[in-house]
Amino acid sequence: MRIERFGRCNCGRVVVSARGEPVRVGVCHCLNCRRQSGSPFLAYAVWPLAAVTVEGETITWQGPLIVRHFCPVCGSMVWDSDSASDEIEIPLGLFDDAPTDLRPDHECWTVRREKWLKPIDGARQYLRDRTSGDRAG
Image (cartoon, one colour):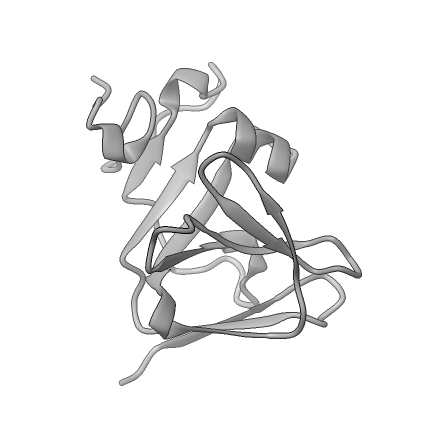
């Protein structure tokens, strides 16, 4: 059975489909993700670039480590990627099926996690970036 997940921006002008299971699912508490989401964290799933199709025009914002794509009409964040990566991150809130069956396997930038939030059971914990290897606890 082939799994395909669909998501869209608030106005529906940008549609995303992701085929297969994600490579990983995470929650990030870094300042960039906090500011982007307007909440204490951003939850996302990562797929190989070749497994994702995006229909509709997007505008971009580029930070020091990431390029984020938004709907130019409603402003929804649709996806992001590291310009040197062959992977694409899709915010879990974009998907049509809510709640999704996707469960985070890691949390990064836990040094910035709000004190009232608890670690996700079974998820690897990273004090900062996942690739830095600085595991928490």
